[in-house]
Image 1 (cartoon, helix red, strand yellow):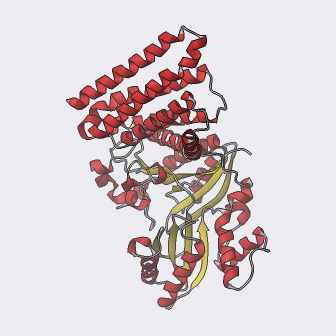
Image 2: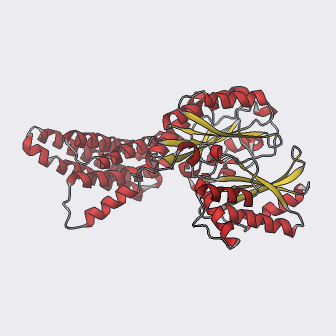
Image 3: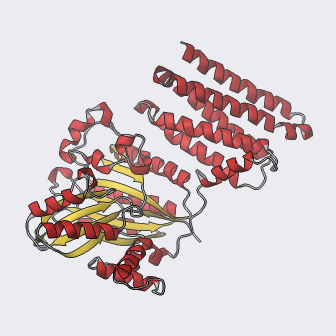
Length: 485
């Protein structure tokens, strides 16, 4: 089955229908992309559009959304109760089928840099793409909102990952990253009091000791005529929808109000509703094992009081067919390979050994590069690409001389890149620098050893092997001299 990538950007316009239609139209005009859901709110003054399709087409559509939104939205005129930092507030990418994690992280970083360079837009990497723990959380990046963005950009701690540090009052900034599914779950109350909604939100959100993985805010929506508790569930497996619903219901009863309806903004995975349907059937004393998936979905929708939720539009499984995840070369095959290398009865291939050590060196170098000053920021994305290229060799049943040369180019490029970062690393990361120098040097020696079987057939490879060893020693000696200084 064809790979599918999902994207759910949020842009800061929820009132002007022609503008919303133009921005969503830019997404829908890209061949290979399917728009699943569009949710706009006047009081929040915000639109969420969910779409998916072939990965290349999804990145093209996301770029088209940025171009259309940045042309039409002026943040100087924007008013809304939802936290936001720019015209396109956030653009998350979620793998659905056949999208390898290491590849996706590298592609999202390249996309983020393209958006920053093309539109002169400050870009923060968040969620799984974040380079520091402080930036994993979207509320942390949004702290102070658009109104405090100019002040925050002056702080070195909050310099963007890509793009200018200078504040652009018209466009603001944006957050881009890889993340898993979340649920944007709004629960409407039979009260007009935003104070009551805020009390309930404080009760259930994680930051106030409520439910783990739950963010919540309370507000009054004039277009509904009632108050609402707006919830983001960041981990649907650890915190199922039914637990959130029941917790809000209990907190509402304590305030002498009731939930009268709910809505999902964006999309959900089918399994989240199946789990919820089984829970409510079980609570009613009914067996769920004989109930079809479609019926379980309907039980979940009715039990959660979900209004206007069309599964054929908002469940990726119903739109794109079943998910068949491809292998995650960044974790599972590498782990299996390491177990295989530990078994004495299996032959030890020099090629496999050099791939493993090269991958370790590149991954650790990437980790260090992510923490370096902005002038070295390009290194992280390049290391991610080098790592992806090396891990792809694990998919080949047999590696030949050209594969070995390809691996050598990637390894030496990683070593050379590390050498370029040496000055910055030597100031604060001497121990890590020594470890990485040893890893890269060890990988070079393993690479030279892997040439031996080929050299037996092609004696002229001796010079090529010697040149690789010489270059590796030169890099190592230069790096170690910097550490001694």
